[in-house]
Amino acid sequence: MVATVYPVPQKTAGRDALCYLSNKPEPIGDMLCSYYNKLTHYINKLETYVRAIDPNVSARRKGSFAHRDIPSVFHYPNSATARAGLEAYEAKLQLNKVAIVGLGGTGSYILDGLAKTSVVEIHLYDGDVIEPHNAFRVPGSMPVDIVYGKRKKTEVLKEIFSQFRVGIHSHADNVTAANIDQLNDCQFVFIAVDHGPSRALIAGHLAAMGIPFIDVGIGVDKVAEAMMLHGRARVSLITSETRHLVNTLPTADDADEAMYGNIQLAELNSLNANLALIRYKQHLQFFTDEERPNSINYKCSWNQIAHQ
Image 1 (cartoon, rainbow, N blue to C red):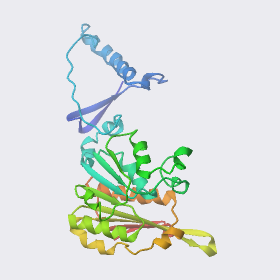
Image 2: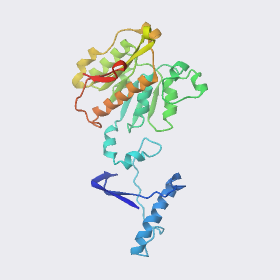
Image 3: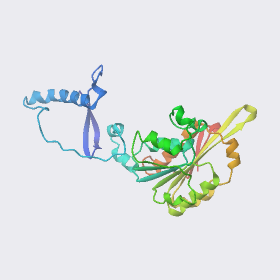
Image 4: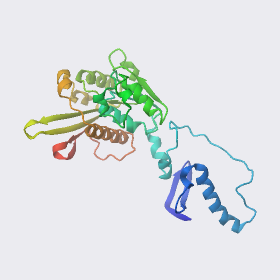
């Protein structure tokens, strides 16, 4: 039995823990295949030491047991957070309602990370369908019948992530002036659209409502003479204190350019999403944030992340 003593007490499940115990047999065998096997293994180990002091002690007698239900959005426990003693940290991420507008390459990766936090409701907005070209830039994989089934992105992604947690809500429509009021009770919004006028509409509305949001974007240019690609990514955080920065966001109508030249690559989409998620968690004071940048920019050719 190995006991590691914490230098200072760690708050775990509302209690101060002074140490943690670990005893994993070699080979582990069936010990970790179920919680029953794991618990009985530790009971047998601990009971041996206790009975050396008092032979009448037994863990197998009837007794009282108080069970405290802690509501969770997850279908199985986040044991890594519990083991690290991060419950109080994780609680900062437990917002009631967050929306992702646009479930393309970047938006779908934002969902992948956001779904692993304790936010109660995640609302997905996108009127597009799953097709082979966009299936290549979303997390994981999908069966062929889904890829060619012309099903709405939000419905497919809701099904996928509902295997992991509850609280995923599908809205298989683009956000327009007709339905933008649905965002009014959100505590945070991610804008991941590639249409400038739509960005202007949504960002302007959220700023007016005082709802904090992050706007993301990537760009890929062909360097024809070198047969290489120049990639970049941007993350902009707008809060009630910086709502004037809405005017700096790209809002031009570039529909034609996007139709024929909007190159999307999974590695840039996922990088863009992860930078957005880190910035989101900084906003919620989960991660440290000394610089407090309004915008984060990555350029592939520089191998550097700049902020302003």
